Length: 371
Image (spheres, rainbow, N blue to C red):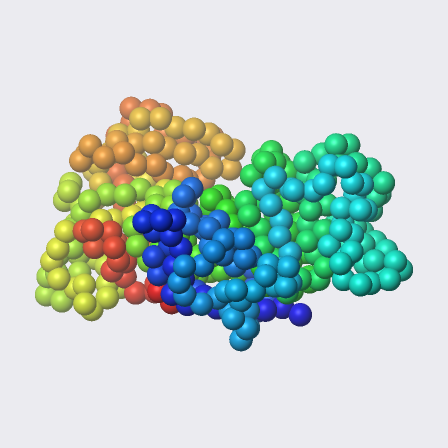
């Protein structure tokens, strides 16, 4: 069993301090859905409202067609995995995993079979009689996940589950979590501030800021066509530059402060007018040319970092702005600091926003946000 989650006009406040002003969200049955945003944006607060651990000052929360606003957390049939694992230090692995089954009026045989099943699934069965103090952080997190899954919940909730692990373990555990979730098909809501983690595990992501959902979509959609400047700069690296959009004879031209001009063929009709804009271009979409006589944006290489397959260049533009470029490495073609270069822009993948950064001006933005 797995539930669809519907949130309508959610309101959360502490006294006069409004954390979530008016939030609407639809999470599909069986999907891996991530709430992503900076610290303090309201993502954990929202997760705890879904779990029943935080009060709801306004709005409606549904599991399928059941209103859960006043439903006791124990009756919501949720599994939850916390940042600090929250496994009982005085209990063995087996007793931790079977803990949620104790109040379900199952026979000893049923409890043992279910516990064995999920310990084996999470590869902690060989530690069944160990206490948590004898387990690594990754092993403890596997125990916490086995305990959450053992009750066969309709909704699985994760609150920054990997933030206490080292980098290598985080990569390993996010793969484990993604594979397990896809295998069991439980509706999963995952909270993180780590954009790479979110991109790696999610079917869809909601990017939040100040209690407001900015963009809901697949990792690919959010990365390639972010809804606004905040999303563009929060997801992945991005070079942000001031520029102008000039409309000449029905053609939209992107014009940089240095005078570089290139045509944009995918500007939305309502934005096709001469105006100041903000341009956001990923480091891999700035194209580097050693020919200083070529057309492009003049720049000087200030530093370069060789990282094997790719080389990162840090450059100073003619306008005084800084930019980062990533391009495939070649030992013979690494460009030394101090070298003058020209840059061009991959116009298919650049994003341009209104001057205040509130809206992407290009076609192709796919935003499932119901706000």
